[in-house]
Image (cartoon, rainbow, N blue to C red; front, top):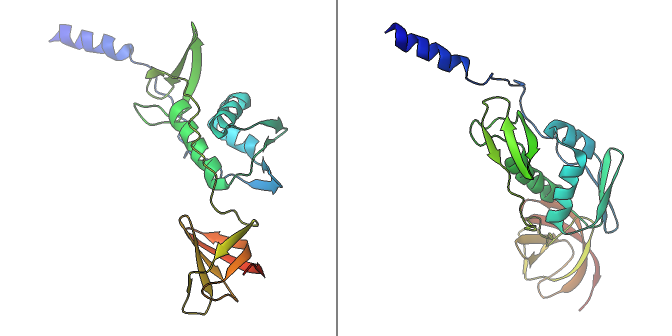
Length: 206
């Protein structure tokens, strides 16, 4: 019995020390500024700080996945492509899953180690480690069918109960006041909520 207890004590002494920040892991929502076809991620530095990774590593991941060019400008990241906050959030979550979260305990208390050209994710909370496989660009963030502030040509297919014309574009149902069924019009998207969009008519095409 004593021999068993001695072996148990030795085994426990060799267990990795459990470390954890204890704080809730909440990634800041992306704050975007669109300038023409350029998108500025204004709180890039705040997101990087929360993920506790090198800014260049995260930025290269985003550029690779988006298939675009860009640069880091102080606390901001600039992309040569029109993006939405949903697209950025999707990619940040993919980065966290691959390069931040421990696959054993689910904690974000990890760090990256490179040894003999192999990148490894080591967990400070439970001691687990796993190799990180460099992914090919998957272009997770596809172009959105509609973007607030942009103009589109649509056909009005129906009229709603409040008299607004209704058009369809991909997954979106678009409400356009002042139009009737059969109109083809140029519209400007004012607001997008889920799969619903609200627009103003700029001109009738037919």
